[in-house]
Image (cartoon, rainbow, N blue to C red; front, side, top):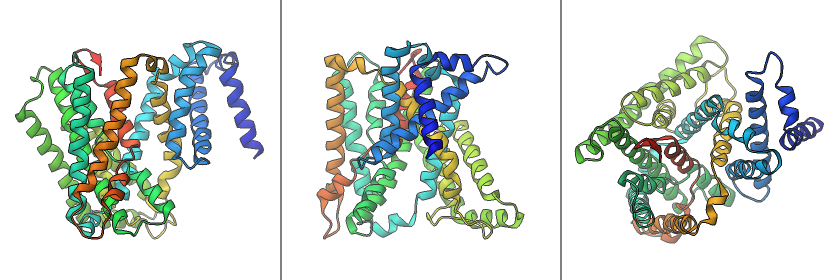
Length: 405
């Protein structure tokens, strides 16, 4: 407790009296000092924000995001905008946040159980398909209506951001309610996992099309989309098959080394390698990270070696707790609340929220089995979270016609 109070006091002192931070940054460590100070403030602030909203029964990611928003919009009132601009645009902090995103998708992949699709049957498939198609076209239509002068790829990308359901938030809520074994919960979880896979494929298509247009490849065409979809499907299929065949052998190899933490090292290396391979073939790197998790643990069983007391997911926790919140804080730092004063921006945001809710509620129509409440399934598919924010982050840094989307 004393250590926590000291950390909070130091955080508040630096936040509201930034000259202390500048003083600490002098001397031989000037080059990295401000970066380390910024990292300390962002990580601690993210944790405190997560703890605060968790006490209100909300997911920690909301607190991390709100901390970034508050910092971006309140800090300049006390200390000017120079410090915020440094943190917001620093390439090292951005890189660490990108690593956090890869770890997050890697962890989601480790949680996926491919057998869940077989258990819930066609209902999950239909729910997932509707949950991708309807929000996508609602978001696209909304963007066309409010942003008629922007390129078509911008409209498509906005539609794509509405497709993904948050598996993490959905799982947390169902656990808290104690209904994870109910038919509705099984359908929701199976559909949400497939929903994320389909959403990542949509992301691959959109980002690939934008890259093609930027490189002079002619923009969107059926041929271009077909090639990207084929790449994404083939990549996922190859990793799923490899996971079924090689997962046990990889764990055995790590166990035979006799080295503590070898499975963790292999997992991280595979995550980064497949992320690189995904980028190499024109897909988003987060797709490779997700596929690496599925490859290592295709049935979500929680892999570990005999020498390890913790599973690979548990071994990831310390690193994830440091880097994943950093991404969401930096996402919050990009939000300028003053833009909501503009009626057009506010109307666009409200319409997108309504489209996102309606687009998932209609998922319930995809339930084909008897005895499953369609409304409960539709409501269970509404949560958005980490993947949707990742989509937004990618959109913020992807260049189209020489400008960020």
